[in-house]
Image (cartoon, rainbow, N blue to C red):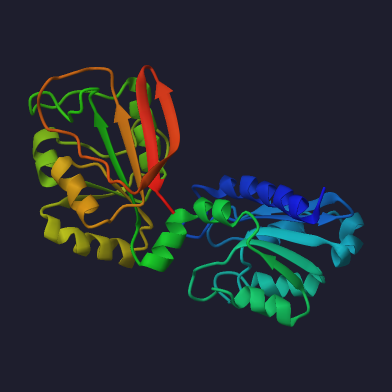
Length: 310
């Protein structure tokens, strides 16, 4: 196995570990770390909870005393650039240097203003060999919400709707159940995984949606109602100021299209049910600059998730 293949192998393990922090690491990013020496893993860790030890700290803590001497000839793999500043915890870059690790492999650079390359520079200035960009796309996608929030200064926006097989959102402008019991549960799971949810005023008046996670376990997202397209900027700014890194838009056609017209979206999720209605509110037209990232089928309903083409 080449060094490049070896680096990718252990970075995949970092990504696996990082995903364990999906709920509790927020608003911090999900990060995984792996220590390797003499061809074997001697330590692993991930960022479990915001305010507690980072992935690197937990990784070093997992090393057995008998393996301590191996640190000075080990490689540390970490999915996101080690921090270089004092926050709720001390800088991980300083810890890595103190432990004497000679080589660090980083998945992607941290876009957070207080890091953004500084951790890598600190390691390099201390004589540590640093490799950056191993499985970079995968590592960036892992923290798409965190990265979008810190680079675009707005939440990651997911547009979502359910449509009939003949392309309507309702039945002759009356509400209709398109989702199955199971796909409804998945929708509530999605809400629990995101920070905020938005619908339009007409949807609220007509459907009275609760917009909670009653079919799943987790926190209810912050609820927003869009009164007009002109209030989109205000809502996005409020999300940013309150640290809400992700926003699900579940409104009707007008609300969804108001986001697409301004190119304010990062992901689109469309569920197509088996029923036909023949007339009603037409589902939005998908934009052209997207690609399918996931296709699922449950109880006959098809769910397709799209992202932007790079």
